[in-house]
Length: 269
Image 1 (cartoon, rainbow, N blue to C red):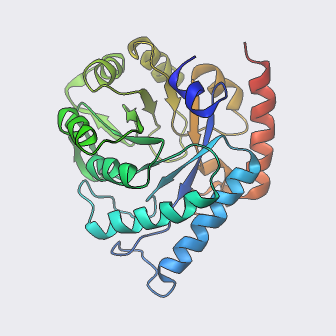
Image 2 (cartoon, rainbow, N blue to C red):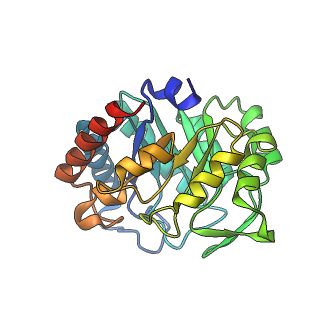
């Protein structure tokens, strides 16, 4: 039994994404609706995913475009407040990510008592928001110093390009052996984009027995393949209204997706 199975109590858990609308201080923030509107949307989407049968949820500041490698104190405060309130209705494991600030993710994860944090942990990448240089030594020491008990799901691909020409297999191995990741997580080029099968297979070779998580691009049409390739799935875009990352969760889509996913999962060896 791997870490994901222990945490979620099922084989190959499926985690639904709760994407926050733009938070205070970000360019697209709706000052008229304020935090109340964001809270209402957060609770609505959280409850929709739980009702659909997702095995867990993960919160993210997806609406805060363009993303920052060093988010403001307002972002940390807002996310902590939102997650603290939303977790009252969550009766299963939950986690979070912060685009694109690993230190903030670990800080919030400790404050809200998350079960996992998804973040860049090791190696160096470049993306639309600039360099991603997470510094695993610093991050794991921060986690230890504040007694963070959550698991770390380390991003090793997605929305960025790794520098130095290092193979994905070796990046995965480094995240586990050097970065002390509890699992490795892959993503496509953008939110909702499918991950190449070759990337998932390479990550498997380098993950040193740790779980490999499919982090984007899972749909009702490719769920069987993704359940076969990954040990767990984090997804959100394909169960949104019109399949749009920045729209609300579509209850019908979410329910249909999980009905098919659970049926397929039961047939897996």
